[in-house]
Image (cartoon, rainbow, N blue to C red; front, side, top):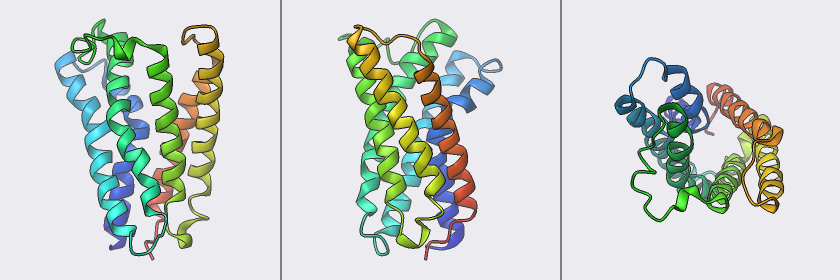
Length: 194
C-alpha cells in the first residue's frame, strides 16, 4: 500500500471518532433530512471503507491485523446509538428510534454495551498496526484506553443506579474519544506503512 493510500484510509477511519463533532458543528445549518445522512456517512460508511482497506493492506505486514475487526463490527451499532441519542437531542425525534419498536436503543444496558464494545474495539485497532508504527500509535492508544476506562467506569456506576445518568465520566469519554480522533489524524499524516 502506498503512503498516500495508507494516510487516506487512516483519515477515513478518523471520521468515526469525530463524526458527532462534525455533525454538531453543522447542525445549526442542517435540516433533519440532511443531518441523518451526514451522521451515517461520517460515523459508518467512511470509517468502514477506511477500515476494510487498511486492514486488508496490513495483513501482510502485521500479524495483529485482525485486531481491527472489533472496531469495524462496532461501527453499525455505534452509529445507530449516535442516531438514537444525538439526533433526538437536536430534533426531538430520531430516525433510528422511529424503527426501534422493541425499545432496544432505549435500554441503558444496550447503550452501555455498545459504547464499551466500540471503545475496546478502538483500543484493539490501535494495537493492530505493524510493529514499525507501534511508537507512532502510542498517543491514539493512550486516548483509546482512557476513553475505555471512562465509559466502563461510567457504565458500572450508572447501571448500578439503574439508569445512564449524566456524569463527568461521560464527558471525559467524549473528550478522550475526540482526542483519539485528533491524535489518529496526526498519526495518519506521519504514517509509513512499511
